Length: 185
Ligand SMILES: [Zn+2]
Image 1: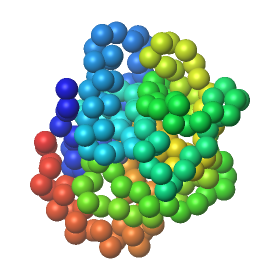
Image 2 (image 1 turned 120 degrees about the vertical axis):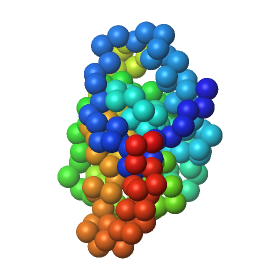
Image 3 (image 1 turned 30 degrees about the vertical axis):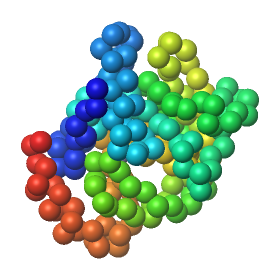
Image 4 (image 1 turned 180 degrees about the horizontal axis):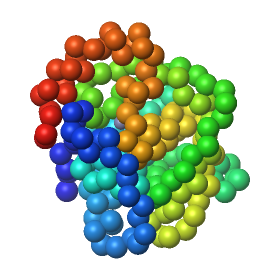
C-alpha cells in the first residue's frame, strides 16, 4: 500500500529511530509499503521516519539512475549494485571515508528543493537484513550518497543540516513556507 510521505515540518523527521529487535509481520508489511511508496515517488531511498514510523529502517534503490553510477561490495565481494536492489537495511551503522565530494541531492520530504551537499566519497555500512543476517556493504558513487542520506534520516538528521550556510540561506523562505504548510501533518 502506498503511504503518504511525511513532509518537513512534521516533528517525526527529527526523531531518532528505535532499534528493530524482531522482524515480524508488521515490519514486513511496512517494508513492502515503503518500497511501493518510494517507487511511486521516483525516489532513490526512503527512511521509516518519512512514512511516520521512527524505526531504524531504510530502503534504497539506485540502479535506475543511469547517469550516476554506483560501486558496491557485499561482505568484501564486489557485486553489481543492480543485482542487490532494493536494499532493505535494518539497524544500520555507517563509517564514512574522510574524502568528501559535492553532489546534488533532493529529499522526498522536501518537495522541489535540491542543493549540492558534501558527502563522503565512500562508506561502509553494517546492517541487518529482513532474513536476520548481518551484512557489510562498501559503497561508492550514488549508492554511498544515498546511504548517508537515509541513515541520517534514521538519526533525525536532514539534508538541510548538511547544506552550506549559503545554500540554506538561499532556500530560507521556501523552507519556512514548507514548514508552515506541513506542520503537524
Ligand atoms: Zn530524505
